[in-house]
Length: 325
Ligand code: PHE
Image: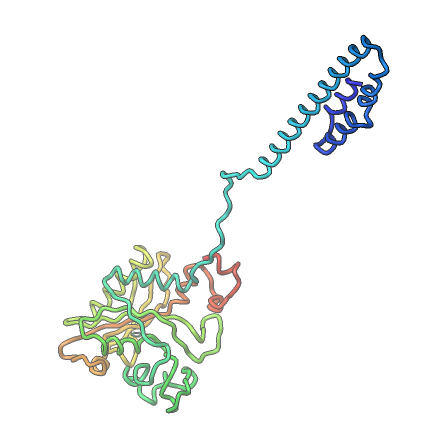
């Protein structure tokens, strides 16, 4: 009886099976209980011998059950520990938090370069009045730049008086009004033109504009600043050139291009000496102070650096496109 019972307990597959086997082997209906009941029918010698054997077997069975129980409990604990284990060496990728848009990044890089050259950053309103966007900048009522095709008008009362600014140049006047010379500011911002969207035009785009007004400022300072900016932003292998042009608010005026190390040219923006009438409109005496200004679009520049040809990509909301930059 003993050997068979011990073997059954030793191989019980789990705690429930062990408990069931134990009560079956030692409970009231068990073989051992039957043997115990039979002791009464034996003589004194036989009862002693059989009693000792019964006690030995009972003890062996109890020990086998206890050993199996502690083995099974240890295995169960080990399983829990394994399941709840923390792998502190595991490396998981960081959450995708997104990042600034390519145009914003470019704008901030440009600001940094100009701040490094000694400029301060200024801003003005996107919804602008006629005076700052046009008239105060020498753009009279009959000028082609005021053509209905080019300008978004905002209906706030007097027809034609409020517009979405078509360039960042109105901030030239605002800075002159707010602070006297010396002025060394750079103006980043969003501008709007009533144009059909295509690969090289957007109705809403971004410009950055520099304005300097101080005593003795010359065209040489303008050309030198554009050249210094070109090397600081694009790199030592790049250079700049000016070509005569016309803007109502600068005199003389020029357009400027950037030459890449491979010799090719990138037409960047417009510039010139601030027109004396514009200085007067900003409350500055042109006999005492002179200044220069230059401005250019940011969007095409941002895309060109990454070899993207179509400006409309700026408006993409496709994460697969955006996350490249
Ligand atoms: N405002 C002009 C444009 O949008 C650029 C410019 C800025 C020209 C400053 C001269 C001086 O085209």
